[in-house]
Length: 85
Image 1 (cartoon, rainbow, N blue to C red):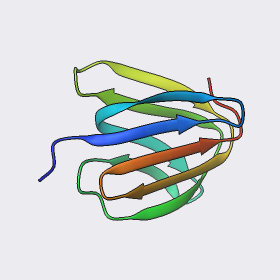
Image 2 (tube, rainbow, N blue to C red):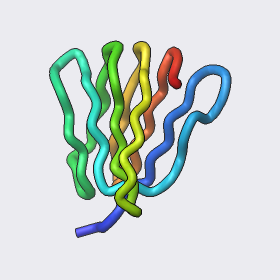
Image 3 (cartoon, rainbow, N blue to C red):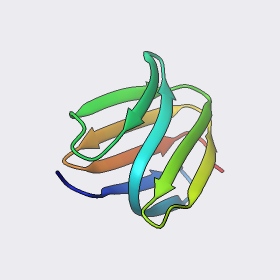
Image 4 (cartoon, rainbow, N blue to C red):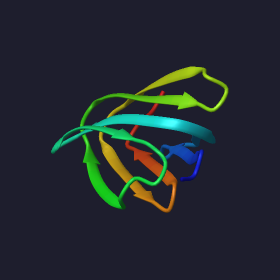
């Protein structure tokens, strides 16, 4: 089992956050997601709400995302938000 996820959050204006994480949670049209290492691949449509990242050093970081997409594959999580802060 892999120990980390490589996470990147981007908006049309800039890269908002990137780094290593142990967990990511987000809300999609299908419901809430909790993403851990070795999660099955997925592509989802994000709804307005919080994306929470538990970084590998134990810090929790929250971002307000307004629409967009989340992609998970091979321990990489990409979040493309219409706006993110």
